[in-house]
Length: 411
Image 1 (spheres, rainbow, N blue to C red):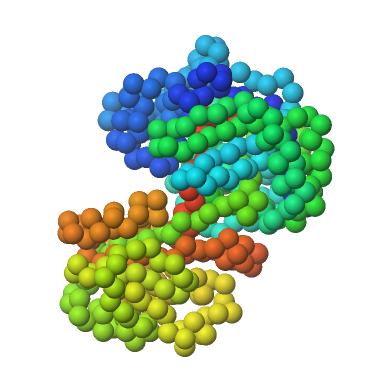
Image 2 (image 1 turned 120 degrees about the vertical axis):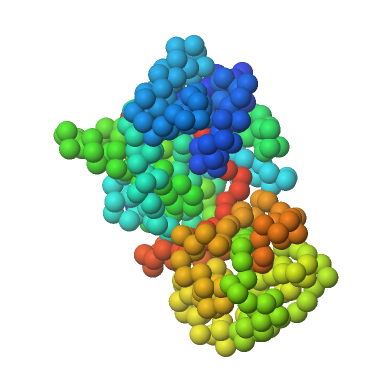
């Protein structure tokens, strides 16, 4: 069973929420983060990326950076930008993009559920990326970026959500990227019902935020060394949790930066051994599993894995993923890319960028071959996680992104 608690949320003043809400800290590089906070003193990104207050030579991972984040958070509270709710509550967070909405429950997931694999993972984490958020959470003494979790369809929770959104939202705004955001504070009468519904759910799944989750857990383990009763706030981490039916995964496309000493004709010939290839006059997104788009030398091809390939991997939840098929049969044997996590000859483009971005990369010469993917499904994600396995890197791209700074959990 999963434990998801209500909590006393620290959240922004209603009139300032649009100025506060920020995209996650890790969608920006250092220069982009600096530009994003320019002229936006209340943007939460100022706290999430405190190095933006210093010059470009400043060590963004220094102790001084995290102290700056802590002090700025305290200043925001002193100014009334943030206030803490008096009672424990759950919240509902709706994001709307291109006319499509998804609503998640905001609450606290359990560190012990993470450690006991009730909260399931599908992606490896890198220690160097964890350390930054460990220091940030530990110094600010708060979790500021929610973990994106999912659960298999549950009609009882959906009924509570449907009833609760009939009330007036506490926040309702459209961000600069045209994403609609609405938040409801769930009435206290629902608290026990929501908690009991989650207790009946056997597993939660991390959709996005593996590093934030791992960091929150490691802060908890560190603090437990000083003594632990089990009910301390650090034993739980801030989450937004969605029914699988609410979610939409976008493709995570690939761009190869060189031909690996082969001609385009040779590449196409080698690919044809495992894929049926058909040239297409229309550059468009891929609509079927086991199909891929390939843009090379201003020509666009549709690749379809041959039946023998599909049959050979259909019983393996990892090998049967489209990202695995492409890696195992194209990227490694043809382009020599053995580890896509570290090889500098491959880069990745989230589906939100669209096919025009891929076309631009090839036409500009920045890339040599672009591959369009069919998105991984929630069923595939669940199958991999339930089998206690890990997906290849860059297998899923969830959109829209949860905003940071709307909900804060003090630990």
